[in-house]
Length: 282
Image (cartoon, rainbow, N blue to C red; front, side, top):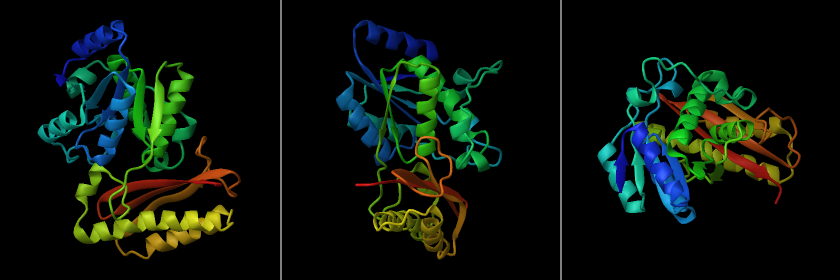
C-alpha cells in the first residue's frame, strides 16, 4: 500500500495509472474509519483496478465553534484498516498542502445546499464541494464512492459533477448501521452511554415514518408529527430539523407522491447526528 502526502506526487501517480489504462476508484474520507467507510472501500475494490482513498480532516467545512479541533483522528489505525481492506493508495495531504497561504477560490453549489444542514451550517457545503473538487483534480479518479448517510452531501456532489461537466461516476451506497440501528459515524464516539441510548430514537423514528408511508399516509406533516414525538420523548435530544424533502431538489414537500426523503439532524448532548431514509413505493 502506497502512502502519498504530496499533491504533486499524487497527481503524478494518478497520471501514470491512467496512462497504464487502470481504472481508479476513490473514497474520500476524514479518517477515523468505521464500517461505513470500509464498505465503500470494499465496493471500490470490486469496481476499480486501483483503489485510492484520502484521509484529510477538512477545516473549511467546519464552522466557528464546531468540532474541528476535537474531531477524532487515528492515522495509525486508519492505515491498518485500509491495508486490511485492500487499499492501494492512501493520500494524506497536510492542511498547508491543500490550502496554501494565498488560497482564495471556492466551489459553491447553490440550491440543494440551502435547506437542511445548510440552514444551521451555512458555509459547510462550500467547504465540502471545494475540497472534493480539489481531491478529484489531484487523484483523478474514474469513479468515486460516497455513503447515503450524508444524503445532502451526496446530492450536492452529484449536482457539482453535472454542472461542471466532471467526467467522474459518482456512486452512492446505502447507510451502514450499528446493531442498534444508529447510522455509523466517526462522531458516534462522542456519545456517552445515556446519549447513545437516546440516539437510537433517530432510527426508530425513521422506521415509524416509513411504516406510516407504506400504510398509505402521504401527508408529510402527519408523518413528521410522529417522528418528532418519538425523538422528543427522549430528554437528551434537541431537534435541529426533521423534514421530508424532494430527493433531487431537497426542497420541503407537503404531500409524498412517488418518493421523498426523511432527513433528520438531532443534537444529543454536544453531538450533532444526521440520518435519513428514502420513502418509495414498493
